[in-house]
Image 1 (cartoon, rainbow, N blue to C red):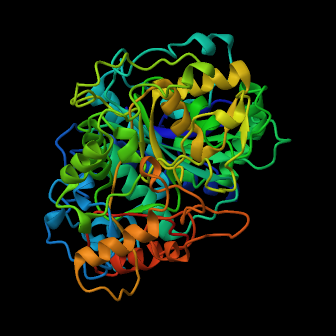
Image 2: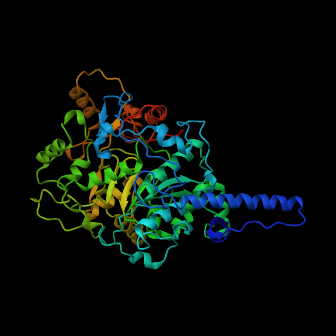
Image 3: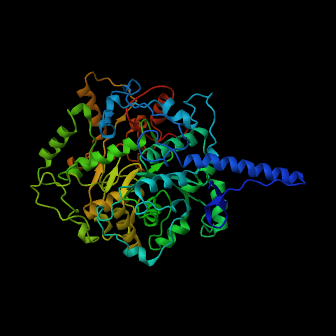
Length: 566
């Protein structure tokens, strides 16, 4: 039997059997219009059925993991990378997100053009994207490859869970391995008034395909939509449906979840702060309670772009983090990796070990016990140089983990519910694009419900990881500065960057008073040259590099942010 997708006001999406329209003896104008609409629905059903019975395009998975049969061929990803668009002033390395950075280029025309991006051939026929239901397609793909134990067939029909008392006791102390499913959710943050351009829609299609369909459901993409009107009752089905139809393009509605501050307040009444700027992780915590089948959650922003296959980049980042030992990890996390100063990351790591010896943070922060009951693993003897190798990181960030104390950062003293507040050990990382574990999100959720304690978004998973002694890793992806330099040798350029970005003490080099990348009320942005970086929270060189990529330049695997106009 063929199936179509029918939208029901009260119950969301449901499958409905297709029936061909019967002929009538007398056809009025309204009857003709009705029959035409029914026939169009029948055609859509045929097209959608094709989306559920396909062979994958890149990774051999199952017949449920392609949109239309034979529609997308393998995308080339072994082209020599051209770094002519990048300045020689660089932080990090492409190796952490690419197995072979020199041969990891994926051209935008072949990668994005099929999905309707302007980088492709404008003469190509336009597929009927409105007939695709990305949530259903992703779930069918995951169910086929992972089975019902790890993939809920009802995912496209669910809303964020309302609070129940059981949530406080629901496995918040379990380790990542206790209930591992091997699956990761990708949550893209947006809001109800967001304007989706044609290129933005194309990017979303390509991203879902690369992350979910190409991996057989190992990743699954969702959208968290912030409804700004807090007076609206999102628990009312009619209101929810109307807002969903108004706020989200049709093809993405079954991957989208609406929330507003009223939902956050129901879960975290003691916190008292629910704005997206300060409390971005509250909605993510509720998402994790609603979808316990995911081991990890990557939080991405709508204005982030990846210049290579997204699933491969994030998989490589996770694998790199898993290989890192815990010895002096927090001390390495507190500074940027400058490739011009070190032969490789191993040399950099050895230097940090030599600098700190056995004096680095080992397990939970020594003062953590004054604020909560640490739930991380029991540390071995400090002579264990390989502790943490092979252990999944419960937090991955894309910028260093900085101690905000004495930086004069705007939110340095924004601490609530922790006593004594000024002594609270904490960390922060710019741009709240992170991978968090289910356990970490549960621990944050539990403490916020219990005591109402909170710090701002950029400090939330970072601080909880530090206090609980969980493995947190800054992944030093490639960041380039579009700057002229008077230096001649790579080593001189490295020293120039080192002077620019490392102003803090040895254990917190990327921090310190008026740390260059942190906004400070008294001076604004202390280091204006950050406005020329490919990855930053404000302006930057990301739009230029994305334009170059989508117009034929094929560079290394980069995470670009922010790209406001595509």
